[in-house]
Image (cartoon, rainbow, N blue to C red; front, side):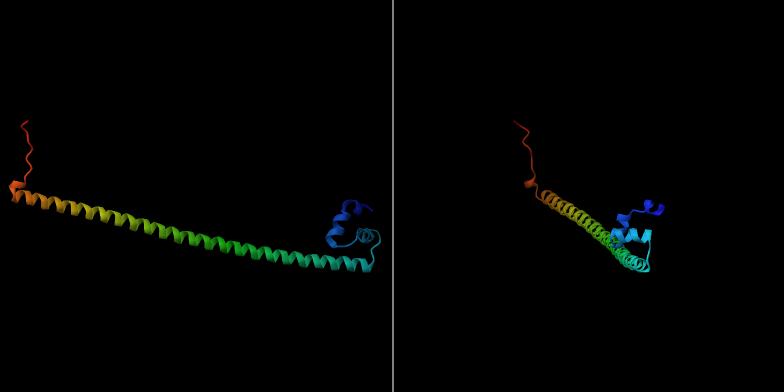
Length: 128
C-alpha cells in the first residue's frame, strides 16, 4: 500500500503505544477493535499533550511574574541606592561646609587674639 511507505510505522507505534504489527494491521486490514484501540491511545496522548501545554502556559506565566517582580525589586533597590548616595553626598558636603566654618572660626579667633595682643605676633627674624 502506498500510504505505508509514507508513514513511519515505528514512530507511530511508539507514539500510540501500540505494537508495530497492530499499526501495520491497521494499514493493511483495519478492524473496529484496532481502530478503537488506536483512537483510545490517541485520546490518551491528546490528554497528555493538553496537560503538557497547560503546564507550559502556567510556567510561562510564573516566569513572567518572576521577571516582573524581579524588575520591580531592581527598580526599588536602585532607587534606594540612588537616594542613599544622594544623602551621603549631601552629608559629605555638609561636613565639609561645617569644617570650613570651624576653620574660618578658628582663623577669626586667632586673628582677633593676635590683633588684641601684639606680644603674640610672630615676627620673623630677618637679621642673620
